[in-house]
Image (cartoon, rainbow, N blue to C red; front, side):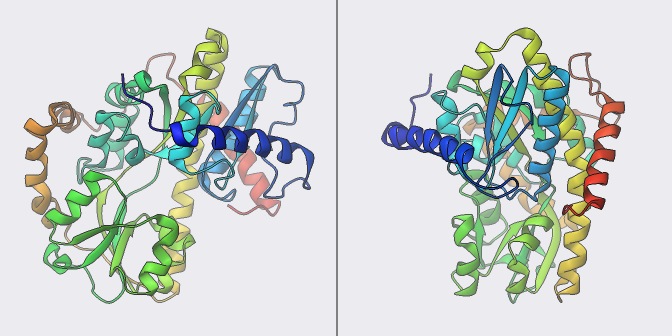
Length: 381
């Protein structure tokens, strides 16, 4: 069993949770950023689940979590409620995971790239060009392989619940358009701290430069890096398009987000409560796909309007360039290599689901209608 890596921060993070919950419940007007989102019935609920994440309340993932909260309240008849703390109110992704491990927080949302440090299986999701398209990707994630990966971190007190769509990541640069893999030669490209992401950029000839996401705008501004890579909504909301005039849709990776629960929470829930939680989470994941698609289309329109040149390169050339990367895992990480082979063998027919995994499609439609109604009422999509 893996050794916990958070000893130095345990006391301060627990204090932050207690203080944050207290302040959130005692001050601030409804809808203000200092107040966590929660079901209206949370005061009467027998079980209140605390979920923290680092995204803005206008983000599709947060909006999907609000859907999850309402569905959980409905399914449980008010017995369960979800209290959401957005915008890193309770810490970074890594810190939130550490709080889950000790049971001081119930749930969080992180990139699957962050989960690589807790389970080797997650590494496969960061490999470039492993999916043949969106349908193949969803079939893998929502099928047996995806479920195995979600459960692979239980021995470190982290249980994956569902995946949230985070789209495809592509390169954007300040002065050098990326049309061929060779255009990356020597360019300093900001990457996540993921070893897989670093290897990929290096394999393409670039110079991978891990930088904290919050520091990236300044790094681009000061020329510390020549570019970065991310999905369209992130490129837009971070305003990186103000500094980078080229966005090359090479779509090298499609790294999903993961909704993670503490095993401390899972173990104390009854079978019925687990069922309600899973159904609400799966419904939120379905709604999030639609919200994400809308956000992606909006982002592409906005950055193009701002003058960014959208490049659509031959992705086959990029895929061929990173092919040698896969072989490094054959001996180095057989688990990752075997998962890669399994993923490649998955078809693009609709993923089969058992009764416990099936979502209430009628309910999804109802919740989508609810989101649309809210949007028409003035809330941002």
